[in-house]
Image 1 (cartoon, helix red, strand yellow):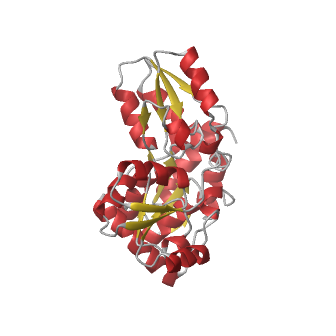
Image 2 (image 1 turned 45 degrees about the horizontal axis):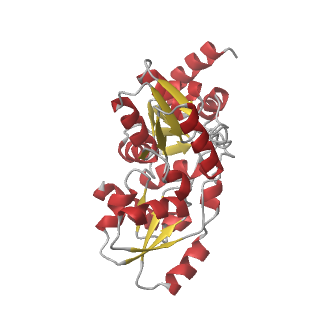
Length: 303
Protein backbone atom coordinates (compact mmCIF):
# COMPACT_ATOMS: atom_id res chain seq x y z
CA UNK A 1 0.00 0.00 0.00
CA UNK A 2 1.31 3.48 -0.89
CA UNK A 3 2.21 5.72 2.05
CA UNK A 4 -0.62 8.21 1.45
CA UNK A 5 -3.11 5.33 1.36
CA UNK A 6 -1.68 3.93 4.58
CA UNK A 7 -2.05 7.30 6.27
CA UNK A 8 -5.65 7.58 5.09
CA UNK A 9 -6.45 4.07 6.37
CA UNK A 10 -4.77 4.71 9.71
CA UNK A 11 -6.78 7.91 10.10
CA UNK A 12 -10.01 6.06 9.26
CA UNK A 13 -9.27 3.26 11.73
CA UNK A 14 -8.13 5.68 14.41
CA UNK A 15 -11.53 7.35 14.32
CA UNK A 16 -13.42 4.07 14.03
CA UNK A 17 -11.59 2.50 16.99
CA UNK A 18 -11.61 5.67 19.13
CA UNK A 19 -7.83 5.37 19.27
CA UNK A 20 -4.99 7.67 20.18
CA UNK A 21 -1.54 7.11 18.69
CA UNK A 22 1.39 7.90 20.96
CA UNK A 23 4.91 7.97 19.52
CA UNK A 24 8.28 8.39 21.18
CA UNK A 25 10.70 11.00 19.82
CA UNK A 26 13.00 8.17 18.71
CA UNK A 27 10.50 6.68 16.24
CA UNK A 28 11.00 6.97 12.47
CA UNK A 29 9.73 10.27 10.99
CA UNK A 30 6.65 8.89 9.24
CA UNK A 31 5.44 7.29 12.49
CA UNK A 32 6.02 10.50 14.41
CA UNK A 33 4.04 12.37 11.77
CA UNK A 34 1.00 10.08 12.06
CA UNK A 35 0.93 10.27 15.86
CA UNK A 36 -1.49 12.34 17.93
CA UNK A 37 1.22 12.92 20.53
CA UNK A 38 5.00 12.78 20.14
CA UNK A 39 7.11 13.03 23.26
CA UNK A 40 9.51 11.50 25.73
CA UNK A 41 8.65 8.78 28.24
CA UNK A 42 7.32 11.21 30.83
CA UNK A 43 5.03 13.14 28.47
CA UNK A 44 3.68 9.94 26.97
CA UNK A 45 3.05 8.46 30.44
CA UNK A 46 0.93 11.49 31.34
CA UNK A 47 -1.10 11.20 28.16
CA UNK A 48 -1.59 7.46 28.68
CA UNK A 49 -2.87 8.13 32.19
CA UNK A 50 -5.30 10.87 31.14
CA UNK A 51 -6.55 9.91 27.69
CA UNK A 52 -10.28 9.45 27.11
CA UNK A 53 -9.68 7.30 24.02
CA UNK A 54 -10.54 3.63 24.41
CA UNK A 55 -7.54 2.38 22.42
CA UNK A 56 -3.91 3.42 22.89
CA UNK A 57 -1.52 2.60 20.05
CA UNK A 58 1.94 2.94 21.55
CA UNK A 59 4.70 3.45 19.00
CA UNK A 60 7.71 2.80 21.16
CA UNK A 61 9.09 -0.21 22.98
CA UNK A 62 7.46 -2.79 25.23
CA UNK A 63 8.02 -1.18 28.63
CA UNK A 64 6.33 2.01 27.41
CA UNK A 65 3.19 0.20 26.23
CA UNK A 66 3.22 -1.82 29.44
CA UNK A 67 3.34 1.39 31.49
CA UNK A 68 0.36 2.70 29.53
CA UNK A 69 -1.59 -0.47 30.43
CA UNK A 70 -0.61 -0.09 34.09
CA UNK A 71 -1.90 3.47 34.10
CA UNK A 72 -5.03 2.77 32.03
CA UNK A 73 -6.12 -0.82 32.72
CA UNK A 74 -9.57 -0.26 31.22
CA UNK A 75 -8.06 0.74 27.87
CA UNK A 76 -6.85 -1.52 25.07
CA UNK A 77 -3.12 -0.92 24.60
CA UNK A 78 -1.51 -2.00 21.32
CA UNK A 79 2.19 -2.32 20.59
CA UNK A 80 2.48 -2.25 16.77
CA UNK A 81 5.93 -3.88 16.71
CA UNK A 82 5.50 -6.71 19.19
CA UNK A 83 9.24 -7.50 19.34
CA UNK A 84 10.30 -3.91 20.12
CA UNK A 85 12.05 -4.42 23.44
CA UNK A 86 14.62 -2.57 25.52
CA UNK A 87 17.96 -4.22 26.40
CA UNK A 88 18.36 -1.88 29.38
CA UNK A 89 15.00 -2.96 30.80
CA UNK A 90 16.10 -6.58 30.45
CA UNK A 91 19.21 -5.90 32.55
CA UNK A 92 17.21 -5.77 35.81
CA UNK A 93 14.88 -8.44 37.16
CA UNK A 94 12.38 -8.38 40.00
CA UNK A 95 14.28 -11.20 41.72
CA UNK A 96 17.57 -9.34 41.46
CA UNK A 97 16.01 -6.16 42.78
CA UNK A 98 14.50 -8.03 45.74
CA UNK A 99 17.95 -9.37 46.58
CA UNK A 100 19.41 -5.86 46.52
CA UNK A 101 16.57 -4.61 48.75
CA UNK A 102 17.45 -7.30 51.29
CA UNK A 103 21.07 -6.18 51.21
CA UNK A 104 20.11 -2.52 51.77
CA UNK A 105 16.95 -2.64 53.94
CA UNK A 106 17.05 1.09 54.74
CA UNK A 107 17.12 2.14 51.10
CA UNK A 108 14.22 3.42 49.02
CA UNK A 109 13.97 2.05 45.49
CA UNK A 110 13.79 4.46 42.56
CA UNK A 111 13.32 2.73 39.23
CA UNK A 112 13.74 4.27 35.81
CA UNK A 113 10.64 3.79 33.65
CA UNK A 114 12.88 1.78 31.30
CA UNK A 115 11.95 -1.36 33.24
CA UNK A 116 9.38 -4.15 33.34
CA UNK A 117 6.11 -4.08 35.27
CA UNK A 118 7.52 -6.72 37.62
CA UNK A 119 10.48 -4.47 38.47
CA UNK A 120 8.25 -1.42 38.91
CA UNK A 121 6.15 -3.48 41.31
CA UNK A 122 9.23 -3.90 43.53
CA UNK A 123 9.88 -0.15 43.55
CA UNK A 124 8.82 2.74 45.76
CA UNK A 125 8.70 5.24 42.92
CA UNK A 126 9.55 5.50 39.24
CA UNK A 127 11.25 8.30 37.35
CA UNK A 128 12.12 9.39 33.84
CA UNK A 129 15.27 11.18 32.76
CA UNK A 130 13.37 14.48 32.83
CA UNK A 131 12.26 14.19 36.46
CA UNK A 132 14.86 11.84 37.99
CA UNK A 133 16.66 14.50 40.04
CA UNK A 134 13.37 15.90 41.37
CA UNK A 135 12.15 12.41 42.30
CA UNK A 136 15.34 11.53 44.19
CA UNK A 137 15.32 14.88 45.99
CA UNK A 138 11.76 14.19 47.19
CA UNK A 139 12.70 11.00 49.04
CA UNK A 140 13.38 11.12 52.78
CA UNK A 141 15.63 8.05 52.86
CA UNK A 142 19.35 8.75 52.75
CA UNK A 143 20.09 5.52 50.87
CA UNK A 144 18.52 5.02 47.45
CA UNK A 145 18.74 2.01 45.18
CA UNK A 146 18.59 3.28 41.61
CA UNK A 147 17.93 0.87 38.75
CA UNK A 148 18.67 0.02 36.03
CA UNK A 149 20.70 2.82 34.36
CA UNK A 150 24.04 3.35 36.05
CA UNK A 151 24.89 6.37 33.88
CA UNK A 152 21.68 8.22 34.69
CA UNK A 153 22.22 7.25 38.31
CA UNK A 154 25.70 8.79 38.26
CA UNK A 155 24.22 11.98 36.85
CA UNK A 156 21.61 12.11 39.63
CA UNK A 157 24.30 11.49 42.26
CA UNK A 158 26.24 14.49 40.96
CA UNK A 159 23.16 16.67 41.47
CA UNK A 160 21.89 15.29 44.78
CA UNK A 161 24.84 15.31 47.14
CA UNK A 162 22.97 14.46 50.35
CA UNK A 163 21.89 10.99 49.18
CA UNK A 164 23.84 7.75 48.84
CA UNK A 165 22.87 6.22 45.52
CA UNK A 166 23.38 2.49 45.15
CA UNK A 167 23.51 1.94 41.41
CA UNK A 168 22.36 -1.07 39.44
CA UNK A 169 24.87 -1.98 36.75
CA UNK A 170 22.65 -1.42 33.72
CA UNK A 171 22.94 0.86 30.71
CA UNK A 172 21.45 1.92 27.38
CA UNK A 173 23.36 0.13 24.65
CA UNK A 174 22.69 3.01 22.23
CA UNK A 175 23.91 5.89 24.39
CA UNK A 176 26.82 3.82 25.70
CA UNK A 177 28.28 3.74 22.17
CA UNK A 178 29.26 7.42 22.32
CA UNK A 179 33.00 7.86 22.87
CA UNK A 180 34.89 10.81 24.32
CA UNK A 181 37.06 10.76 21.20
CA UNK A 182 33.94 11.51 19.14
CA UNK A 183 33.07 14.46 21.35
CA UNK A 184 36.63 15.79 21.01
CA UNK A 185 36.48 15.42 17.22
CA UNK A 186 33.17 17.27 17.03
CA UNK A 187 34.62 20.09 19.15
CA UNK A 188 37.43 20.36 16.65
CA UNK A 189 35.12 20.38 13.64
CA UNK A 190 32.49 22.72 15.12
CA UNK A 191 34.24 24.82 17.79
CA UNK A 192 31.31 27.27 18.09
CA UNK A 193 28.59 24.62 18.31
CA UNK A 194 26.80 23.61 21.51
CA UNK A 195 26.84 19.94 22.45
CA UNK A 196 23.61 18.64 24.03
CA UNK A 197 23.82 15.19 25.60
CA UNK A 198 21.43 12.74 27.25
CA UNK A 199 22.46 11.54 30.75
CA UNK A 200 22.24 7.91 29.60
CA UNK A 201 25.67 8.55 28.04
CA UNK A 202 28.81 7.63 29.98
CA UNK A 203 29.87 10.11 32.72
CA UNK A 204 33.05 10.94 30.78
CA UNK A 205 30.90 12.00 27.81
CA UNK A 206 28.51 13.90 30.06
CA UNK A 207 31.44 15.90 31.45
CA UNK A 208 32.34 17.15 27.97
CA UNK A 209 28.84 18.40 27.10
CA UNK A 210 27.52 21.95 27.20
CA UNK A 211 24.09 20.75 28.29
CA UNK A 212 22.74 17.56 29.87
CA UNK A 213 19.07 16.74 29.70
CA UNK A 214 16.25 14.41 28.77
CA UNK A 215 14.83 14.20 25.27
CA UNK A 216 12.23 16.90 25.97
CA UNK A 217 14.78 19.09 27.75
CA UNK A 218 17.18 18.83 24.81
CA UNK A 219 14.40 19.86 22.41
CA UNK A 220 13.46 22.83 24.59
CA UNK A 221 17.05 23.98 25.12
CA UNK A 222 17.92 23.66 21.42
CA UNK A 223 15.00 25.93 20.58
CA UNK A 224 16.26 28.58 23.00
CA UNK A 225 19.84 28.64 21.72
CA UNK A 226 21.00 31.46 19.47
CA UNK A 227 23.74 29.27 17.99
CA UNK A 228 22.97 27.94 14.53
CA UNK A 229 25.06 24.74 14.80
CA UNK A 230 24.00 22.26 17.48
CA UNK A 231 25.37 18.81 18.21
CA UNK A 232 22.87 16.26 19.52
CA UNK A 233 23.99 13.44 21.81
CA UNK A 234 20.91 11.23 21.93
CA UNK A 235 19.03 8.86 19.61
CA UNK A 236 18.81 10.23 16.08
CA UNK A 237 15.00 10.14 15.91
CA UNK A 238 14.95 13.39 17.88
CA UNK A 239 16.40 15.20 14.85
CA UNK A 240 13.03 15.03 13.09
CA UNK A 241 11.33 17.19 15.72
CA UNK A 242 14.34 19.48 16.11
CA UNK A 243 14.51 20.24 12.39
CA UNK A 244 10.75 20.83 12.13
CA UNK A 245 10.75 23.22 15.07
CA UNK A 246 14.02 24.97 14.16
CA UNK A 247 14.34 25.13 10.36
CA UNK A 248 16.94 27.91 10.62
CA UNK A 249 19.38 25.76 12.63
CA UNK A 250 21.78 22.96 11.72
CA UNK A 251 21.70 19.78 13.80
CA UNK A 252 24.42 17.15 13.79
CA UNK A 253 24.44 13.75 15.47
CA UNK A 254 27.26 13.39 17.98
CA UNK A 255 27.92 9.74 17.06
CA UNK A 256 26.80 7.46 14.21
CA UNK A 257 26.10 4.85 16.87
CA UNK A 258 23.13 6.80 18.24
CA UNK A 259 20.50 4.68 16.53
CA UNK A 260 18.24 2.38 18.56
CA UNK A 261 17.28 -0.67 16.49
CA UNK A 262 14.26 -1.40 18.70
CA UNK A 263 12.85 2.11 18.35
CA UNK A 264 13.16 1.79 14.58
CA UNK A 265 11.11 -1.41 14.33
CA UNK A 266 7.72 0.31 14.14
CA UNK A 267 6.62 1.19 10.60
CA UNK A 268 3.42 2.70 9.24
CA UNK A 269 2.36 -0.78 8.16
CA UNK A 270 2.67 -1.97 11.77
CA UNK A 271 0.47 0.88 13.00
CA UNK A 272 -2.09 0.07 10.31
CA UNK A 273 -2.25 -3.65 11.06
CA UNK A 274 -2.36 -3.08 14.81
CA UNK A 275 -5.50 -0.96 14.35
CA UNK A 276 -7.01 -3.13 11.64
CA UNK A 277 -6.70 -6.38 13.60
CA UNK A 278 -6.45 -4.94 17.13
CA UNK A 279 -3.30 -7.01 17.40
CA UNK A 280 -0.40 -7.21 19.85
CA UNK A 281 -2.45 -6.21 22.87
CA UNK A 282 -0.41 -5.62 26.00
CA UNK A 283 -1.60 -7.22 29.23
CA UNK A 284 -0.29 -7.00 32.81
CA UNK A 285 -1.07 -9.35 35.69
CA UNK A 286 -3.44 -7.47 37.98
CA UNK A 287 -1.50 -8.05 41.21
CA UNK A 288 1.70 -6.79 39.58
CA UNK A 289 -0.16 -3.94 37.90
CA UNK A 290 -1.53 -2.57 41.16
CA UNK A 291 1.92 -2.56 42.79
CA UNK A 292 3.57 -1.02 39.71
CA UNK A 293 0.79 1.57 39.50
CA UNK A 294 1.71 2.87 42.92
CA UNK A 295 5.29 3.53 41.81
CA UNK A 296 4.14 5.30 38.65
CA UNK A 297 1.49 7.34 40.47
CA UNK A 298 4.05 8.48 43.03
CA UNK A 299 6.17 9.76 40.14
CA UNK A 300 3.26 11.56 38.51
CA UNK A 301 2.26 13.22 41.80
CA UNK A 302 5.73 14.65 42.33
CA UNK A 303 6.03 15.86 38.76
